[in-house]
Image (tube, rainbow, N blue to C red; front, top):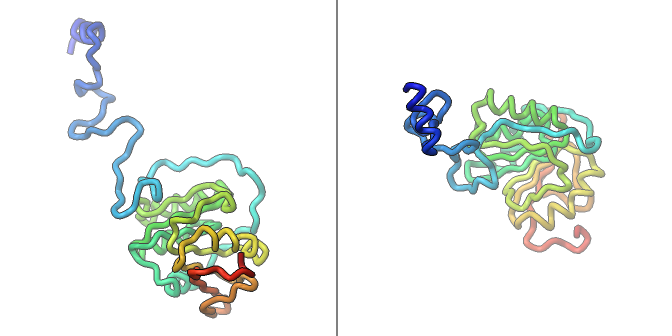
Length: 219
């Protein structure tokens, strides 16, 4: 295309990028700039958005717990006791390197949402999701778990500390639907007695199901 032709198109308002000139959207696609196709079925994009380049912000406050990865045999046992499946939406609170969410997606096809306040952990978790080939089913975000809406979760996993579990307990019981499964590595929730307790390689796993009616002492 010669210079006079390009000048004519610019003057008449015709978009050069619509003509297949270098730098435009490839032929055969009709995506708008900044959008990506949804890769999800059965869930809205507000729950687990299509994979995008992850962004992080400076850490807003110190984390509530030190980062200690959950051993893989414990991860496997946590997912097994919760009976996670492809129709579940798993929220991991304090997701660290993402191994619980990524394992659930890889082994069971589970959609997962990992939350961590540490930007380095979020970056690492997203990188691990890419290596595992599960970026179409998982999302990791840098967020304060006390400011997170858990209401869409069908399974919640956590490896925090006793005092954090107790602080979270009212929020979990008020936001989660009855029947939602909760699994904690190492620490219980005080007066809320677990439905099941497991021991895996010397590590304790606690399992609860959110009741239809929350007892007064747990509210």
